[in-house]
Structure formats: C-alpha cells, structure tokens
Image 1 (tube, rainbow over the protein chains, first blue to last red):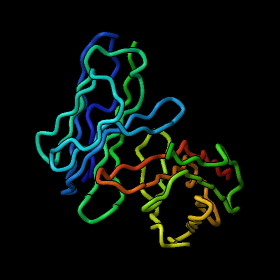
Image 2: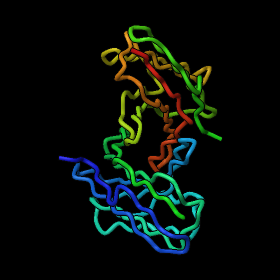
Image 3: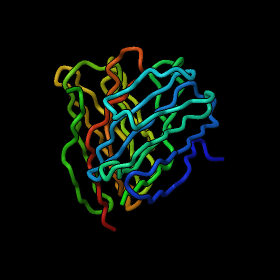
Length: 114
Length: 112
C-alpha cells in the first residue's frame, strides 16, 4: 500500500486557471508538508501542518492555499496559475512527536502551466 | 542561509567504485539526513545522523558528521548501476516547526 499518495500525478493547465493537488498519508503521521522542486531540482518547503494546524508558511504567494481537513490529508489549491508555478510539487509526512524524525515523500505532482 | 550545499554537483563513476558526496551547512543542527531521489520519483530517506554522532553506517552507506566544520559526507561503497540517482542532504536546525532545509543535491551516475 502506498504510504504517501498524491493526485494527480501530472497536471497541464493554462495560465490563469485554478487547480488543486491532493495528498493523503496512511502512516498515521501527525505532520504533513508541501515542497516545490524547480527545474534545477532545488527543493523548497512551502507549508507544513501539525495536527491540522499550520506551522510553516514560507514566503509563498497568497495564490497558494493549503487545507488540511484531517491529519491524514493535506491539499494544495493554487489560484490564477502563472508560468513560474511550473514545477514538481511533493507532499511529505512525518511523526513529529517522536522527535526529529525522517520525512516520507509522495511521488510528486508535475505541474506544467502553459 | 541555513541551506545545505552538496558537492560535487555531479559525479560519474564505474560500477564497483566508491562514491563520496559532501554537504556543508551554515548554522548549528539538531540532525542531518540524506535522501535519494531516482529520476521522476519522490525522495527516499537513507540515513539520519544526530549532532552528537560522528559516524553512522547502513549497509553500503557510511555517513560522517563534523559539527566543527559544519559538514557531512556520504560514502556509498561498491556502487551499483541502481545507485544512479540524485542525493540530497537535509538539515534540521531545531525549533518547533520540524522544518528540514534541503541542499541542491549531487547527481550520481554509476556506469555499468
């Protein structure tokens, strides 16, 4: 069974559209993350939720809005998509209360904005 | 910036050789982790070393940490073609937000 899953795997859309990416983890973890990986493979944290509470909100445009309906899900909605949003978006999860633990990554969502 | 930096950016070796990748960081850490990313896939955790540890082994992997130099190295012994991937170090600098800061990665190519 997949530990951290994301949908969709690929997303091709026009500039100005609104889109959502979904993430689910079945590991029982209490913390979930969204990362953006650019074309040079640089991986940057965007958001993190711990027990459904936002704990990391890096310098990300307001067009990006995360939502965590429960501990197992963290979705990312993007309004008014721009060309520069093209990237691979990774969801990850960890169990924070066991100390500084490792993060488990999803397979990524490849977003291409035309 | 706390960002880790790996070097080299790219490394090409023959199967059976050892591969060494280095990571440097700028501020004190709680722990340092190494991840692997195969082409088109998500990152997979390889090994975690805490700030009070100097060396750790896992199978063919050996990680060292020198907190005085703020650097770490990942050694893969007896490399295989399947080890071809990008390798990232990630640093945990403490704080309450469980944030990891990733380096830019080393692309390792192991030629059969």
